[in-house]
Each structure stands twice: as structure tokens, then as C-alpha cells.
Length: 233
Image (cartoon, rainbow, N blue to C red; front, side, top):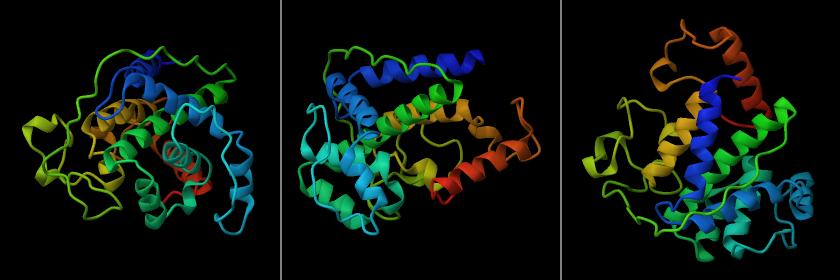
């Protein structure tokens, strides 16, 4: 395995264990635990098999998170292709802030990347880290606004120095901007994502690859996986 992959996983798990922008380290690790638990939730299996996701029941949960957090984690893990803006607003109405929502989604994404990678290699999933003490920073970018997505995000033109580095180019795609309401979550996820795919500066350089696969091979795999996950890649 490339050393960069191992390092990126170490960095990602350390980030999950540390206090975030809106969540404590304890709550962030609980989100990671719930992400794994959701894969075997009986209600989620019924939801995914149903014609409509409006199925009554309670999620199987370790009980470390509140109902809104559990619903968010389980639906994002098990049935993301049928989420809607109305559903997202219903989650917020149950007590989550949009900043917490985004930070939780960032943790889910990192855990799923790393656990899927482990399963693909046939190795055991990594033990969850011990939560680190400390208070969240509670920083909200002043330029964040709801415009192109269900929740607020930061457009490249609205970035301020206090946000820290966000975009290498003003034409960054919306999939890249999705977590920008919580800049550190965005940086944590993409540090992991780019190591598994390609560095941002090479994403649109279709004649280049630094991996063992050629670039066309990489894109064929990416497109196939995206189609299987109903992602508008």
C-alpha cells in the first residue's frame, strides 16, 4: 500500500477523534460508531427495499447520539440517493443546526471511505480512536449563505482569510464546495479523498496520472462506482 494512503488514514482518524468546529471529540467518535452501526440497521434495510422511503420504525442504534443525529447518519449511509431538501429540513427541525449537519456528513464520508478501503483489501476495520478532550471552535464562515444547495455553503468569491485555505481555483465544482460551511471538515475530507483519487491540481489534467492505473482506467472505475451509488459524478 502506498505510504500516502496509510498517512492519510492516520491523519483522518486523528481528525475524527479531535474536537471539531461544532462537535466535541466524543460526539465525533460517536458519529463514526453510528456510521458503522447503520450498515446493519433493520429499519434501514426495509427503507432501502421500499418503493418509498416513508417507512415507520426506529433505527437500531448504540444510543450515543440523539434521534436527529441517528436519522441523519443512517439515511446518509444507507439510502443517500433518495434524500431530499424536505428531509434535510426535517432533520434540522428535530434539533440539529446546519453546521452540525455538515460536520456529521463530513465524518460519515471519511469513515465510509476508510472502511470501504479496508473491506476491499480484506483487512479488519480500524478500531475507533479514543476521543480527545477540548472544546469545538464554533467558527462559521461569514460569507456562508444558502444559494445553490439545501444548506449554506461558501462560494469561492466569498472566502475570507479567517476561513483558511478552501479553494485552489474559483471554478471548484459543487461537490468540492459541499462541506464548505465547516471549512475544517472540508479540508479533512478532501485531504483523504484526494489521496485516494488524485490531488486537486491534477483532477482536470486528463492526460496525467500519478497512480499505477492510467487516467482512463481511473475514470472508468470512478464512473462505474458513481453509477452504482446513483451519484451524479
